[in-house]
Image 1 (cartoon, rainbow over the protein chains, first blue to last red):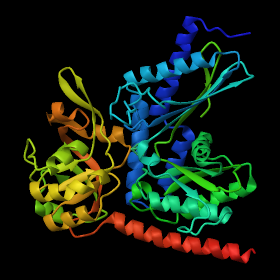
Image 2 (image 1 turned 45 degrees about the horizontal axis):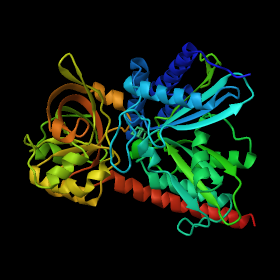
Image 3 (image 1 turned 180 degrees about the vertical axis):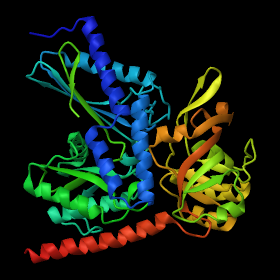
Image 4 (image 1 turned 90 degrees about the horizontal axis):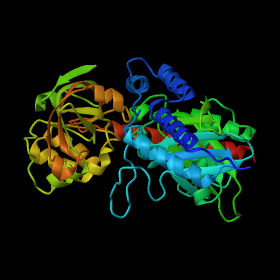
Length: 301
Length: 199
Ligand code: SF4
């Protein structure tokens, strides 16, 4: 049985996507807000780190109140959507793209998609490769919609290591992985608008590693990795990275990283990649359950 | 917190040191890639930049009821202007540069020699920084450069920044990079030792 959405339901679905985009762009999820506040508590009184985090805190409140983008760089648009397998994926893709155009018109997204050859910006955010849609059919009769907006500044400071790596002295084991993670933080300094969060993939290839490292940002800040060794690695990396003293915005201080999320993918024997994506403090992530009639039922974060 | 009023003077600028938290009030001019390249080619700015503040920012500006209103105005990455900045500071007498991410050796030396500072704004704080802009006083090169790249003359009040390169040869970026590099070396040694011990 196919779900044939009426044109009214299609419109409703598009509106729901626009609302997911608006909320993602203007409001940080509570778990991220809590992590920022925790950082604020850590910083010494009247320090530069405290100063930066106070401005960030005020910005978070202001953007929510005004329902306007937290940061003017609304970044790469990464959608992760599961949809009822009876639904037409092609139609869904079209609706999502239309919602991106509409959200751009409303100012929830900046005109952020540039033709790499001509430098032209068509002003819609829809073009070759943008937005990024991961669409997956499933058995359930509703949609699970998740969105990440990832800024350009922090995307620029990500890194990929091919182990063994002689510069960092990293071999093909967890000790080597840890060195790569800490090195990436030190290389980034304050340029990724820290305090940041890392998404890390051990293994995979150059493309699957980076792609999956971004999916780590769908996890909540406080969650615990189900894999005990990776859970330990995550904890150690956060603690040790915060010894680097880079601090908020690279001004110096205790809060350099708010979190590290690691997962592993199988690899071919010849390769051993560690792919690190850096997410800035403007960690925009949202998700909603949407009914097969196009209505938002509940928010996930 | 230090309050400082634009336009700056050499004396005001020399009084600032790395790490100072400062709030600026007065006029700032936005300028990013296109403007810097154009000034570097020897063109003169449409308005004097002597003792001025240049802000690396491509603001989102809308016209509401015939008036320009800034809706987002966070800093953009400054290193892209590194090839041009020192020459512009020298030739035009710029006293302060606002941006994010810091700048390199050439700019640090120009700041020291000619009396200029680099002021780091909080990246991503688009809404807070837009609130600190009281008025758009003028715009230059709107046709030539397009809206985000144009020279916007903005009147700001209590615009929050941190001095990260001062006019005495100091750079907070350099210091923090060196310090974090040293700590990283120590962490690496500890990781290697732990691994050797577990064998
Ligand atoms: S890195 Fe993040 S906070 Fe910084 S400018 Fe880019 S999107 Fe905004």
